[in-house]
Amino acid sequence: MYKIKQYILELNSKDTEKLIEIADLLYDNESVIVEEKIPYVDHHFDLKKIVEWQQNIIINPGGVVKKNVQNFIDVWFEQLKHKAKVRKKYGGLTQDLNFDRIEFAPENIGEYLRLRNATHMFLKKMSSQMKMVPNVMDEGMPEDMGLLQMQAAIQAVASQNNSIQIFEQDDYKKIEEEWAIVLDTSSSMRLKFDEMKKFAISLGEAAHEINSKKGKWGFFTFNNNFRIVKDHYEKYDHTARARIGGIEITGLSFIGDAIKLCTRILERENIERKYIFLVTDGQQIGTIGNRKDMEEAVMEARKKGITVIAIGLPQGNSKIFNLSMPYENLRKTVAKFIAAYTRISEDSI
Image (tube, rainbow, N blue to C red; front, side, top):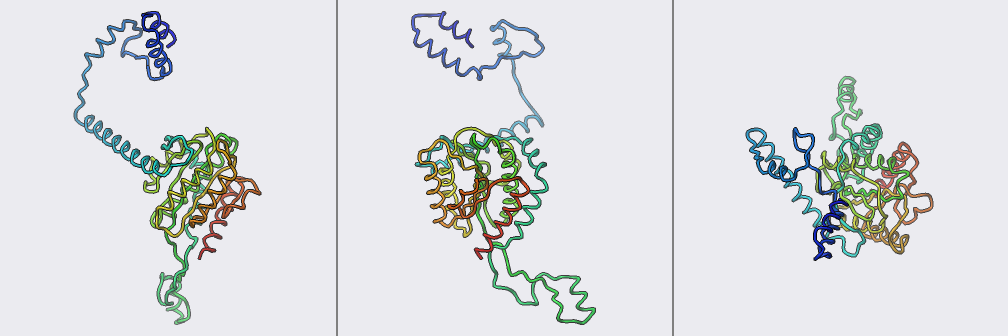
């Protein structure tokens, strides 16, 4: 690229400013210019021949290939339209916030599979136990109604004992919940990030199990940008999972802005139980009045009926949250989180 720049400058010195502008543009975007590799040719230097060779290429796919190409094009356009629609929705919520841009997280399905394999035991434990946590008291049901327990029924008939309870009574049930999982991906998270990323994927899988039928949930990351891993109205499919694998560490830390944006996302829905699960080390970089900004954002969310739970904050930084816990290791943090979620859900009954 440097040689190209020098060649342009030497070519014509009459309009130097224009030539410099063009040369700088090429120099700054050198990654766009790719050296072409012509099939079956080891070396080529004649640019004229390359152009002529390209002009003679005509590709007319047919049959299955043509159908697959068209399908790929259709899928690609649908994804572009969907992403543009979601960005527009979130863009309308970012007024007065400091984020540089709203974007989708990059995809890396291989990294997701690595994380899932490393957290398999905790995923199962977290999903199964949290799914059984009641969050509302039912009015109850008569003793002769419920889920029939076959063994108890056989025993009652055989012993002719009517006092044996043959129906399982479940006075508790789950109502809709809306979750916003938001993971800090700023540079200060680098030391603990792999471990905290494993907890985030465990939390995401649990959210999918708990809210797949009667609730909505979203997964987001933030630094000086706000990235969408899973929108509340997206399916938790291979694309969303691949975005979890693509989460990267870089940039500043706008914790207050992230909480404000999640609050605005959640308050649009008419759902009784709303949670923000904030995974962060609490180190804010890049905004004025960092600590105060975070506290005000948390208090505003709580005033609107949103429960804010922080995971990863050091001891002593927990007063403003509904609940806060430090990150120790995956096993201990999962156990503490399940206990905390159970306590908060039961306290709300």
